[in-house]
Length: 285
Image 1 (cartoon, rainbow, N blue to C red):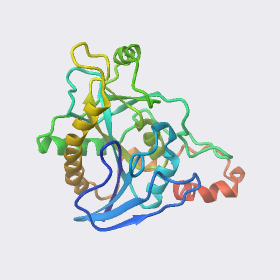
Image 2 (image 1 turned 135 degrees about the vertical axis):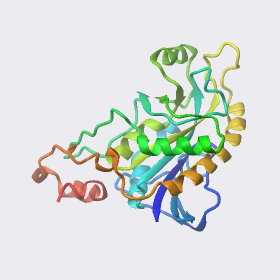
Image 3 (image 1 turned 135 degrees about the horizontal axis):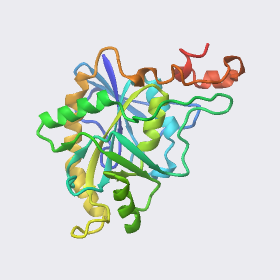
Image 4 (image 1 turned 90 degrees about the horizontal axis):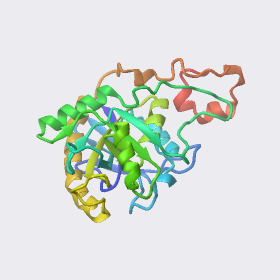
């Protein structure tokens, strides 16, 4: 049985259609995850779901304990991880209601922890292509087959928030080649790569940020209305894509740490080896 993790963002607070459902509290060396994980099955797939902002949407993007969230997914056996979240569109052709499967990231965050390493161990993983191309292609093909308007590539600008962009920033991000803008993807992608999980995102376009001369500036009420329509679509795509995620993973995500840990093994503190055992265990005795 393959295990697929889903991190639900604004509007996606549960996975429907699961059986044998149970809530699981996970302890991590990095503190508490956003909430308990909801584990259940659908067909031959085991799902592990986490509401990114906690039940009731009570945690700001900058307050998220990304390390605990991803560590918990790893601890529960997740190999394929799908992030879902609302984004603003920076392109005319990415209209509100469309799905985007980003393949690149630009980091505009500045007060978040985005690595499991430190405290006596150093690792540098490759991050040139921050999303798993294999997982992304499965999601894109599935969306197309379901008749969903999907953009199979795109650059996601990850901003700090919680405020939306200024108009000057929105124009700048367009000049940089950004396609969508959100507040959560960067840290999840980095940490998933360090944990050797395949990670991809279903980005749900809800607005045109504030660059568009015709459409109104982003208003949260409009975002939530469009998002509610997109959430059902995202659930369908995930449910149809999950059975295709099986067998040994052949992508680079599965061995991202193979040559990344550069610290002398004899110098790594035992406490760090213990804390990171589920991540580094096969490389560090």
